Length: 157
Image 1 (cartoon, one colour):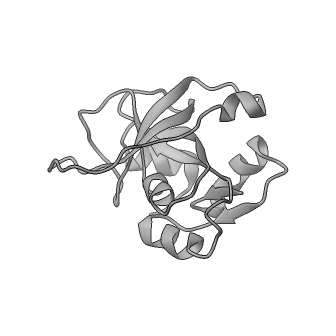
Image 2: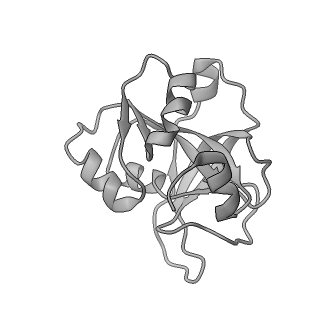
Image 3: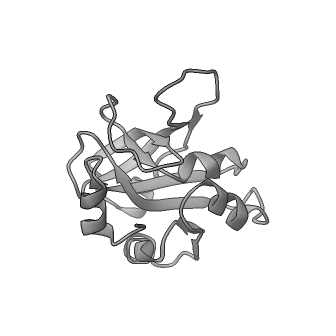
């Protein structure tokens, strides 16, 4: 199953994973929990969508490795999840970066000292629900700019 946050990402899902079922969840943690709560945990999940990055080139494809929450103002112990990988190779997709860390936030990230990573609003919540097989391919839509994100994705306001 391919999981996307917004209908505007359906074209990405169909381009890279044309034979997979697509589920549109809505943006953010609560929409993820609501949309996936009844999906069996052994269901393989591919998450594709737009992400921000402080330094990766806009339009570049990345395959996600480690998944964490984004909380820039405090530090506390919490899990880091590592995705299985191999998604790009399995589907014959050329990516700019593999095994990229992703930080999921509850809001749009507009600045960060973190480099060589990406930011989204869903993936940590998907893996946190306990799915056994989650992989992710992300497209950099912006360099931590809401304006750039809108120009590329026509996404949330």
